[in-house]
Amino acid sequence: MELDLRNARWRKSSFSGDSGECVEVASDVPGLVGVRDSKNPGGGVLACAPGEWSAFLAGVKADRFDG
Image (cartoon, rainbow, N blue to C red; front, top):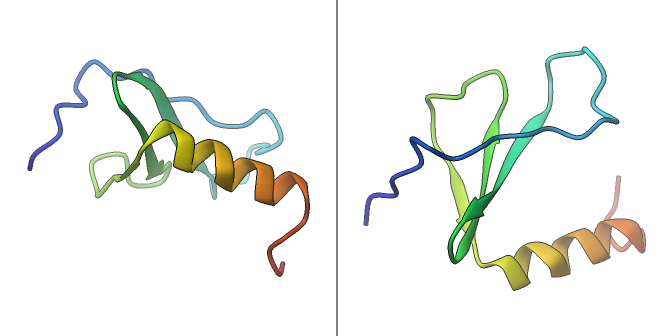
C-alpha cells in the first residue's frame, strides 16, 4: 500500500534544536501518523495508527524506554 503524503504537514519537536538529527511527524493525515527522518525527507516513512502513536508518546513521557 502506498501512502499519499504529498500534502502532509511535517513538524519536528521544539526540543530538537538545530542539530539536524531529528524526526518529523505528520499527524494531519486521516487515520495515521507519519514519522520520518528530517535529514532524508524523501526517504521512508513509518506510519502508525494515532492510538499507537499516543501510546508511544505516553511511554516516552513515563520514561519506559532505555535511553
